[in-house]
Length: 352
Image (cartoon, rainbow, N blue to C red):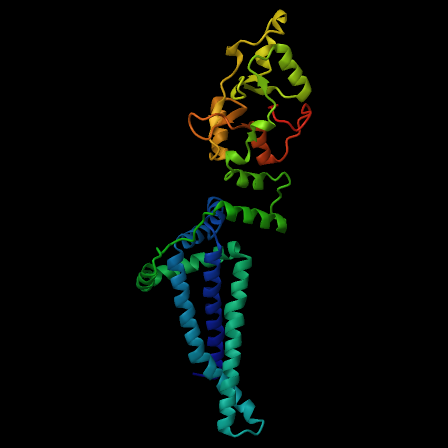
């Protein structure tokens, strides 16, 4: 082959190698969630890009086939052509023909290796990592078409590869996993905040992620920290408690100190003025919804919403006494941070 033609082929093979390397990294870096909105918007190349992301195994096999063929071609064509052009230049140094040819071959090999690594590997790889969403739209249509044209070869390669994957005790996947654990999502949010791509001034994202794994035992208020009212409390006693704390709901305890329900301030508003100092009737005391300490806060919130209550008693096991109380306000603070109540007078716990 003519040496100059060999150089042209070298440039073409480098471009082909770069295309498949770039496509490989663009496919693995892209996620379905990024591509689907582009498909709905009718973005050019988005449908093919989505197909590529959904068939990662086939796309990567196609890329590897293309990279291997291009790399082999570079070794077969580019190195001899470049060595042939360099030999006369090296001979100008006065070196014998055999030595000059050997030196030219070595120099040609180093040049081809450098161009292959930098131009055919590193540059397209870095571009695809930096702008994978844009480039998958460019690579997608061509890559999908090539993959379908060599489908029998790709399937044969995948069958052999998948056999060894299963032999290693793993199940092959056609698509990159698009789900994340809570810990991974927390890490993503923190990194996004640090890079300025996500604003979370109120801590809503972080709070929601932490909230999804927190248990009732981490939010509940123990008995000794509660502002409680006695079972025989009067209207005036309730009013004094409200004036002192600013709370509107209070757990009620019996003579043995066990929580037996709770009172809401509106439960005593309609009591006759003449009976303000008399013990309240038992029917005015509301039943306390019960949750377990190992229940997730999210589930406890659902129970409280279903019952329409702002507080619930924490009971370790059925039939046992209430060991603490969980308040709606405390649950909300796990999501949005501290809730400042203008009526709250101290750090004791009732319910506002």
